[in-house]
Length: 391
Image 1 (cartoon, one colour):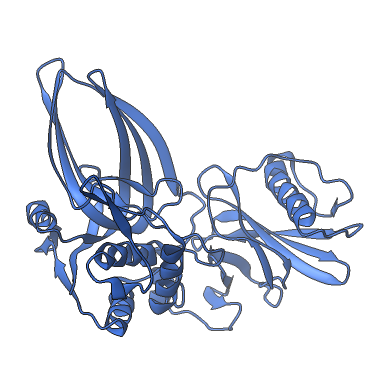
Image 2: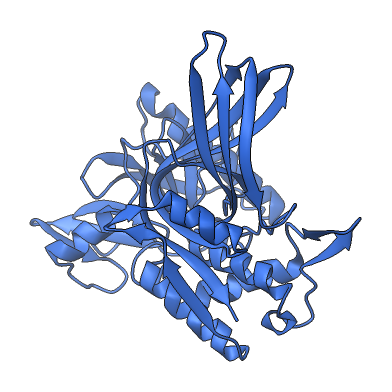
């Protein structure tokens, strides 16, 4: 099976007419956008791979999310005695190519039930009130469906929201501590490395400690000193390989999309012990709640964090002339990040009132914003926060 596009919600594809390709499914005008995204991607792939088929027969069927709301369409392709398929979905008002294979059988072709697309390479059939995994024939229990529902694509959900705000102030003060002037900011880049924020978190933490224990990543120099200040590389080929190695060590996507906290620990333990070192995890949670004061003390002691959150906001900002311009990314999805400092910013506004924004400086694991400040004032849930020491 040859894969061209993986699960990412970052494609903004324009509708382009594809000459020589016959689309045999009838589409209502409101469905033109689905077909346009598919046609555009098909044209790009055929051009990139020098596929010169005179015609491609395409049929289209709806796919649904795990709550049985229409999520998009699966397109089956036949050309030159070959078969392929593509999934185009809509989770946040934008039509996105989730998967695209020029060679591969439709994963639903042996099942007559509703076609359920859960997440990357996870396909279910729903029939007679039962969910069946189409590639193995395994029938899921209600409990297993509930677990998948937490990480599944949703037709009515918004994965990412981007926006900006400006804070105008007459005075500003900061209480700030950084573990490094420039910290690691690795992120997943491999074509098949998906849902990999947790392996990226582990890689950023290992990259930080490699400064002190070079054997953690043999042959890798994680940073350098400039004017007496240690500056970490924000990305490197070795970092990419490390994310991939942890992806497999943590068993990411093997039982469900993503990585559990237990699998994060298991993968980190395996990797660190294999390098002759030890690792400790000190929780920053107290009675089920995040203890920010305790967390700041750990950061002051030069100990970085592993954060596991549900719904988050990451800010980047530029300050000048008594105004702070803030760009933010908000997500409703579970996520993991590495923390390398904190920053509490108190503004005195023009009316004399004060506003305090509290942040943890993070390596986000996001490709488009690899560094930023995790806004702990935003409506969010921190499931777990570990202070990570490697020794």
